[in-house]
Image (cartoon, rainbow, N blue to C red):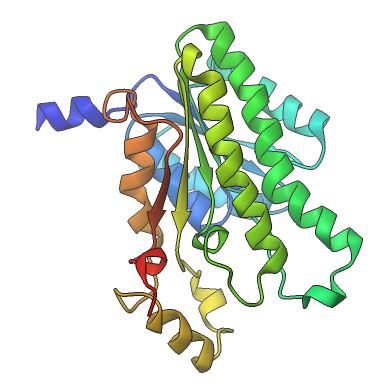
Length: 260
């Protein structure tokens, strides 16, 4: 047991979860905190959600803070990242988990909608990664950056055109940054979740859509938020994943392995 605890312990580490106020991002934040990391929950508009996640972390004996950060605005993001460094002395782990989606048909997508989705899902992750990597380099200890992609980044799905494109860009960005920052021992990886709808979202999925999803998922069900915890903890761990960088890892119940 001591071996396992030592392998995955994040004691003394500082983590940021961008988009940590939601269901999936919140579960990731709580996982990192349970492993010992001081965890900053970044939110844009959902302050209540961020406060709930931070309160749960603190209830279980962890240390948390919340920071408002608009990932579309460089100054806003920089101020939040600087705040974490000032309060906790450094940054070791970054999880880029913000996400916005749309079901607008291709011919009806406005330039405003396109820019919003690409800005939040891709540009924000790039900006946060670059800002945090700069601090990691200055610290001289390396670190772990984990981008949250999507199974739709590799298999085109109906009704999520712009979202899928943004996540495909995230996969490519992950590999580029992994190459760029490997000499500084900054590992950059991505997780590709399959269908992990929050309870409130499941209610609006039609039975036809559900059957279609399950029919393409060998495990024949949705994923639960806590089923991302092991992968997040592994990639965040300085010891367990010390030679893992540039990886894009499906956590999808077999969705991306299914053909016909």
